[in-house]
Length: 102
View 1 (cartoon, helix red, strand yellow):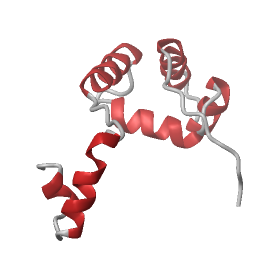
View 2 (spheres, rainbow, N blue to C red):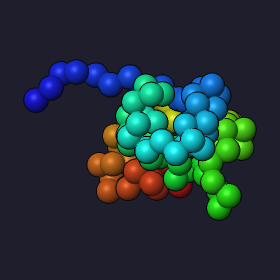
View 3 (cartoon, rainbow, N blue to C red):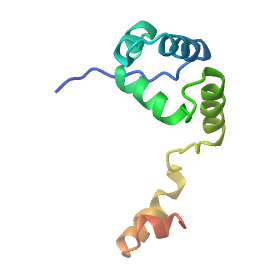
View 4 (spheres, rainbow, N blue to C red):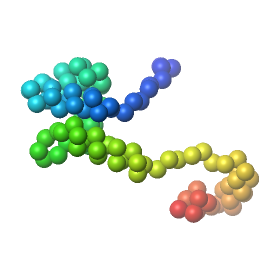
């Protein structure tokens, strides 16, 4: 088993412009990924999330990604003060959803 940790980075607007230019000149996805310095799967996700029927546009893609970032939910760890209550409710047979009022 590998102990290597992955570092996830979001694409920059510059990288998105590179992607648009390279795809526009006929580069294959694998070549684009290598040239931009991202994995093929990251490029594939970028295209599936941010391309439209008209193709891939860097400005539109960056705006969509930025909007998703703004509306994303930040999950935080449970406050330790609530652990006794949570443990008690679990022992009473409550589900985590019921405990968190979801």
